[in-house]
Length: 469
Ligand code: FAD
Ligand code: 2HG
Ligand code: ZN
Image (cartoon, rainbow, N blue to C red; front, side):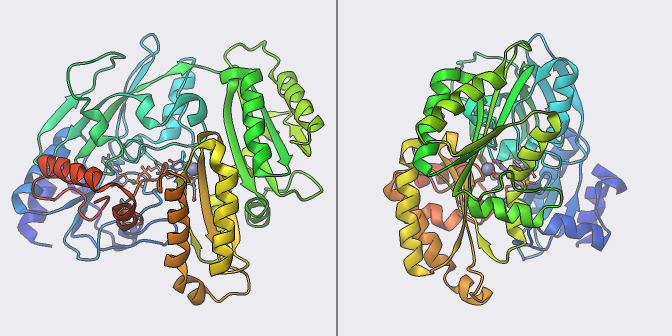
């Protein structure tokens, strides 16, 4: 590293604001799956917005690109620098202050490096609820949640990160600070600029803080693990439970048999629920703000009705908090468990809920013609039409041979997704993983407008270059 540049950065952030130990540096330069890795000119960890601004100003003047990073739990390589060694990684994890909690306005204002689970905990302390919920919540940050417009398991009832956000503060690529920390439900004063930065994966600016929405705390919860015969049954079951329980239905997750087998095999403490094996499973959750609502009974009645019509083959409603946790662990363990089964391809797609069964049947047939005996780790937030259509290599097939067919498999999945009018990234973003595919599947006009926005805000292309676009 150019020593004058290093000294200037150190003068801004102090010695604690730099990661110099090569072993510690590794965790900022590669993702947890080992799918992406890079080299950085420097890893900088500012502790407040002014420091972010000063570092960005300096980098802009020197023409140096910056890669923002939060908890580094993303799945598309967006937070990892390229291999040039020219880029600066800016980690926001030292900016972890909760700035204000306002239970009457139902808002919480936090710095970008606050870990998601802490926001949930702080909300509970004031008898409120922050709904964003996902497997990485113990280490992902609100900055990363915003930059990827994260989804997770409660979108069905509460929406994505976009819907949970009222205001943000951003440092622009040239170092200027935009303070948009307004906790307003209504604000029609022109373009809604925060929406540009939410979901931009760090390509337009550094998000340094946000005002988020809080909700009344659910006081009654009922959770069921349900075996079903087909994906058609899953769709009928959502509609049945929604018509009977309304928006008390807060989670509806689908899992293929293979997904559950992988978790039972690889995640310590997780075991299959039923003695028999079934083709598909659903994890369902109802919640209500009234503690005296008998949700278990409500859920059991809906399930009994679905059992009569053959939509449900077996079901258990959790009887204790420990059982609730065990059921969620079975679902949330899939991502990690699949990692133990050799190379896999991740596809985070969405289509209209009603089309899910046809999609799964069609794409399954097409893939079998390319590579037989794939292990289809199909699961996801099916209540939102979001499938993690992940593919693990056949047991008998050599890893390199599987990887050689990867592009063909992915193309078949994306092509089918396009035929069903779906999206090739529902909640994980594009990063580097899906950047080139997006070029093929988004309309040219959409891509042109995105390029124009990028040029308007980051004319020198220094914000997380090579990601998204
Ligand atoms: P990082 O991984 O560090 O970064 C992600 C992207 O955001 C990068 O492009 C980075 O440059 C950018 N970025 C980070 N911070 C900032 C900032 N302050 N300003 C500007 N840009 C920034 N996602 C879902 O949507 N739903 C799920 O259910 C879900 N489950 C997951 C389960 C597991 C086990 C794991 C490992 C991941 C899961 N994810 C899920 C992926 C998800 O995107 C992340 O967990 C999370 O939202 C990313 O936060 P992070 O702080 O780790 O961001
Ligand atoms: C989930 O829903 C996450 O578990 C991770 O979005 C998906 O690892 C994946 O493919
Ligand atoms: Zn997911």
